[in-house]
Image (cartoon, rainbow, N blue to C red; front, side, top):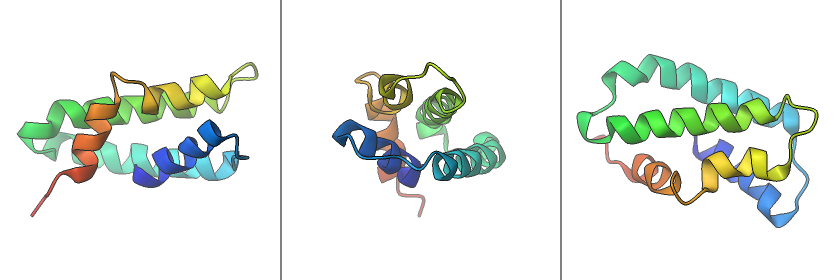
Length: 94
C-alpha cells in the first residue's frame, strides 16, 4: 500500500509513471488486502476498507482511456481518504 501510494504520488509532481508497475502494486494490495480483510484489527477495520477501496478506484483509472492524473491520485490523496491511509500505515501490529 505504501509503495502504491508513493508511486501514485509521483504524478502530483508531474513525474512519469510506470503503469505496469502500478498495476502490479495494485494487484498486490488487492490480493493481500483480500486475505487480511477479515482479520484486520477492529480499531482500524473501517480505515483498512477505505484504503483497499481507494487503491481499487485509483487502479481502475489505469485502464480508462480518458483518465486524468486526478482520477489516479484523488482516491489516495483526497482529504477524506488521507486519514485512513495515514492510520493504516502507522498502525503498530505488534
